[in-house]
Length: 164
Image 1 (tube, rainbow, N blue to C red):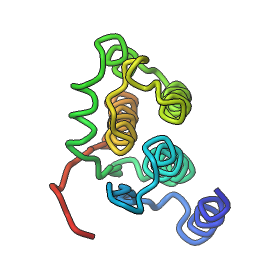
Image 2: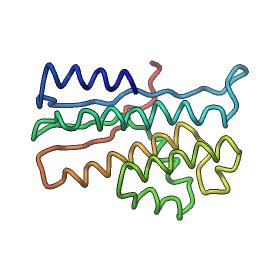
Image 3: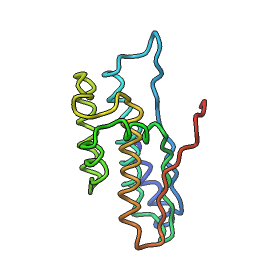
Image 4: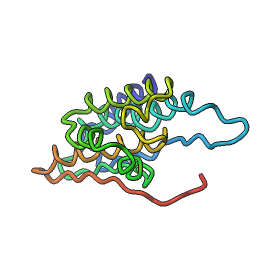
């Protein structure tokens, strides 16, 4: 949070109102393996990086976006797959979320459920990375609806699997 606030203040001071494009590409995916943390332990850091901090940076910089700016979110087919593997009730909640706060509440719900081992009972797919990218895609869609009357464009894309 502190580094986001510092960067946004620096950008505002140096380039006020001149953000032409923001490409959000930060993400983590904890690989399975002998030394990997348990599923429930992966939920909070994955959601923190892939969803919460991406939203926080975007919200901090949105006031600097030029009238024809671009917001790009590097998402993943894992998000699309997590959506498809979720229950219809959860799909509706995600699809109809009207605010970033609603999506953040869902993210917190997922983390708590994953830590308790009950995410499936609540309709979530069993994927921390997929859940984080599903909510990020929903956030991009929310912004796309908001900016639809303007020249600002919002996109979410999947570059395919990359070894980074």
